[in-house]
Image (cartoon, rainbow, N blue to C red; front, top):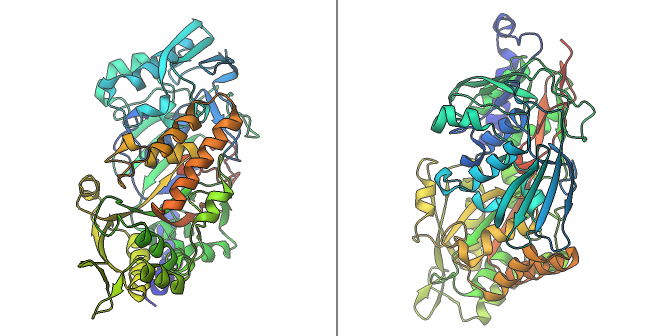
Length: 531
């Protein structure tokens, strides 16, 4: 009842705001007001992993290649074409000749070389440096040809180069601003240019005059709006009110409970994207007592009613996971997904009985003096709390005790860097199966992001082959093996595939949810305002 009351209150708030207040704050002509929940710490491509950074960087800058709506097809970007050598070690990119930075400087191969080298430079301290691949050298053959040479094949390279971390930057601007690049200014080749940033309030962009080199997935290669304002509104009810009263034009930050309500409203347009790869999961620290028993992990997978937990938490704005990955992602293996146990509480009890876990006097199972109890860490969010409380009740019914410890966003990452917990809840974006599994299950990534401390030579070998095999079929077979190993060992409890929804106001046309790295608007080149 509480959740319904909150949702109703949000919509009611929008309806009762005084008309004169709405009119006084109405959006100026040809200025797009985008509402979001959080700001980024900076807007320097290799130095921030925040979705809040990526969603602005895609508008302020460009990448060598771009991503189609299907999230599997790589399209031209700043590079109009490319070739890969037969040994998979050298990518030759042929650049467009009509591109300029926001300050009017022509874009050339030298900018690509500088950008990639800066990304790789340890002094940049990029947390996503590995995404650039095992680079031997990036060189400018001439002003419009770049050779990207690797020390080993890297089948993920083109996918990784679509991400905002690979946004091309201007060397002169970086050197002028130093550590304040992306804080006090930004000079890119994107459809919109940096105007101003007031942290935790708004970031303002203006149209890049003369920009005509947008990705081919758009009907319009040039921006259709004069000015874009990214406004920070942390409170969900206030964001909904702003959308209802015309003070906001677009948002992807919609409370789950409000999605279906907004879909029924004639003055709000809603867009979604089936190929959206953002998942929630529970990871088990497999070297801790209790969690180190594979039968406990299997029983947890069997004992949790994912469908009920996901419905109660997301109100239809997410789907229960049947495997470890979205079936639409490149490299997904159906056989591995079939290995993941589905809800069957009676079977969970039989598994625990057979493994020697005997119910104690309080109903919690015991084996060799060890109680079937574990601690799960997570962020202090409504999603984490609701999912974990639903799980807690399910697991209690099969004789497993789960204790919940949620932490504020300012400290949760520090707590997750410890070895104190037995399990953790998290969500994450990915671009391919190999991208996801190489991040979380490679033994070299312990203790983070491989917080499960999963160490397995066969998994490591499969992950290496999935990235380095020259033959696409060999890469697909390798990532399929990795998925099957992980599924058979129940290293995670897969929970939910989040859906992406974008709400837009009546004066806004051309909004289509994209979804790369969780970003709804991507370049936003088809967005236009009718008044």
